[in-house]
Image (cartoon, helix red, strand yellow):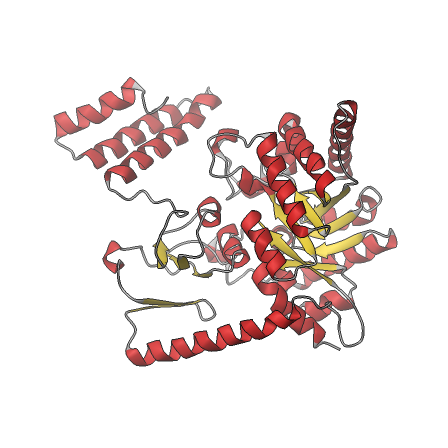
Length: 463
């Protein structure tokens, strides 16, 4: 509808005819002028929010005019993808058979984009400070994720060195395949479950292939991102059902909608926030809009008839939020029962990713079946540092004693109430903290599927 707006069309034509501007410039200027016009309507929040829509529309038209529109799921040849930055939605749609690696000028190693790259097993170097340039198209490149290096047109000697390194990596990867079906047990007999973090069905397939003991985090928000409207109940049901069937009886923990901060769905019309990481996101959206929440919960409970599904609520800060979420799930169960719709036994848990939840973990443990500690956000909120901000990289201590104390306290409080505890943040795959987690009796580590076998090997070598 915005695209057909006569004001927008007239503004583009006037710029081309009156100022002799080229089409791309005219479209971008018209979009910006209209965005500024709507942004100035301080007494009408709804109209203010339309400014982002005009910017989006004008940007998309300009990309088509420049022949720069790119669907990352349809790339049909092996490439290194270079961009100024990528959103989580763009990252999750990559065809990893052809996108061999990606490089961004901006971004942060702690962003959701970087985290998703690790979950789908793709090499990435972010925040290089280098702008994407089409002059690089067709050139040979090497992306070294371990060292954070990008080499363009390397000399033969360097190329041979990296080919040897790649061969060694593939040999080690092949040797790890022997660990797909063995238990994750230390030499002293301490067992720990290794689950996988996933964002879509392709990730679930990777988890199965990696010998995961279950799915510790199904990021359901990626059913919402990159779409023009909400996913239907049926669409969600089919996705959750497929995940449950692929895992063949192993637990699948589905995190309810966690939109907010850098994970956006424009149709939610959340509006601009000064600090979106601490604003309207995750469980807050679900409790404010219970109709959205109920649609997702119905899909989850219906899918639970086809496997072992658990549900967990993100960004919890109080017992009241948990009680409201549990009441809504009870309402959904009653609705399904009244309609004679089948569902399974669904365990209900929460994510511990705010200091408030960690400090209140003794009380929260009385209300739920399990905890999952999201170390990425727990670190961000404990240290009061935006993990999306690349300037924070040198200050963001992922091994902060403050965060480790909160984790230790949370596990102790949970176990006193016989509540299971998992780790589903990036620290779960950090070999420097594996012994800390085991010694503090964490029940489960949930990591990206490509990390499972190497982590299993590491744990089996520990005393």
